[in-house]
Image 1 (cartoon, rainbow, N blue to C red):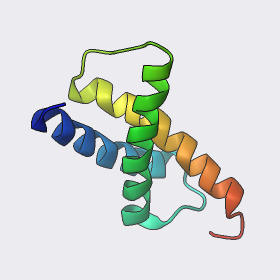
Image 2: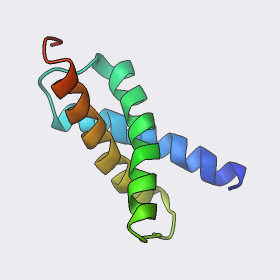
Image 3: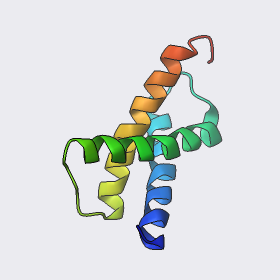
Image 4: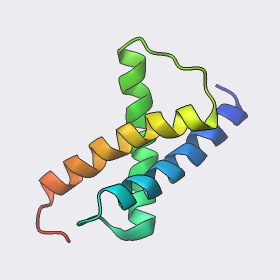
Length: 86
């Protein structure tokens, strides 16, 4: 993994966190919290796709989609674990 791939993953995670925060409106931690969850989701989404044997050609758009899937999973898990947080 080179610097460009890491930078693309971080950027995709930030964009995905923002996007997931917009799509899943109720709850969450605000812009910064959602972006952090997006970064975590980016890693999770990459691991999920890797485990399924899907290795998309990495471009920013594809990375954002993969990160968005992971971010949505992380946000749903966060809301299930800490239901009282709004």
